[in-house]
Amino acid sequence: MIKPQTILIIDDIQANLRLLVNILRNQGYQVRPTRSPYQGLMISQQEAPDLILLDIKMPEIDGYEVCRQLKADEQTRDIPVIFLSALDEVFDRLRAFDVGGVDYVSKPFEEAELIARIKTHLTLRQLQQELQTANETLEDNVKLRTAELAEANQSLQAEIERRIRHQQEKDRLLTVVSKQSEQLRAVTTWLIELQQTSHEATIDMYQQFRQDIALIQSNLEVVQSMLTPDNSPIIANHIENSWQVLKKVESQIEQASSAINQTVTAKEELTDNPLLLLSTREREVLQLMVEGKSNVEIANLLSVTPATVYTYSKRIRNKLDISDLPGLIKFAIENNLSV
Image (cartoon, rainbow, N blue to C red):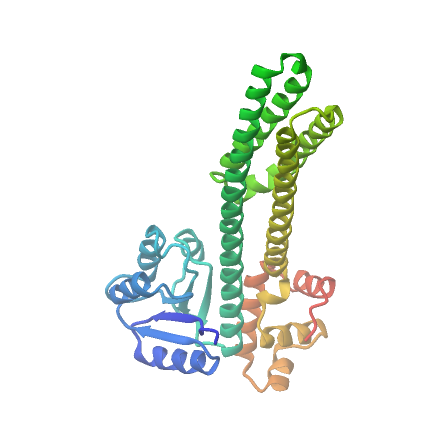
């Protein structure tokens, strides 16, 4: 059974807590409400919720400071924080994002908008966790393959030394094998360094890995072509083992690269989708604006007041960062934002 995602609500107004708890529990979320910002910080450290809804204006400490403390703690800094702010409150969006908030929702709550924003950031959070898991899996595989390469390299080096001592007449063969051994050590070094790099640097290394592996494979082919029936079968066995290890490393790198690239692409597409910026009702208002309806006409069609339509219009412009009506209509047409 899949464990429901947990949302922590920090708001000193009891009525707001009851409303949010009802909305979120109806959506299947596990909800932890609290009126105390200090208790909220403690819950975040102990239970690590998947997302936090944080009120701006509270009597003990404000939401900005709570968010700053969350982001300063290694245990809680990755938890997404959505700020809650009343329409009549002074809300500094730049400060909210500067202290680590990912979004904000205005009171009174538009349920559809609230749920859409929560789902968006929970999805982004899940993608980040999947990306982290993929990186950890890659690192584990690299450690395993590094050990195999080191073992094969040690065995091959020992055989080279024995052949040098007992068969001086075969210096040319041993020189080529030694060169191949150095290349295996170089790959081992690359793999060790890979464990200490970020995900972006790991992706940049893939092409270099492929080139190094191709070079080692080429040298192995040269060594095999030089082997004669009277050569030690131990050398042939070690070379074959090197082939197998290289194939495993190559396969693991390609699989990890494909999985990580797919996760990053999905995250970028989700973040860049303009539809996610607007709620269903906001898209309805925008569609009617594109059709040339006035605020009064839109209010009658949607059974709301003109003042509410004005609020929706202002919110749409803020979200899309478009100040004038012609620019807003042009944006809607170009992006095919239909209801």
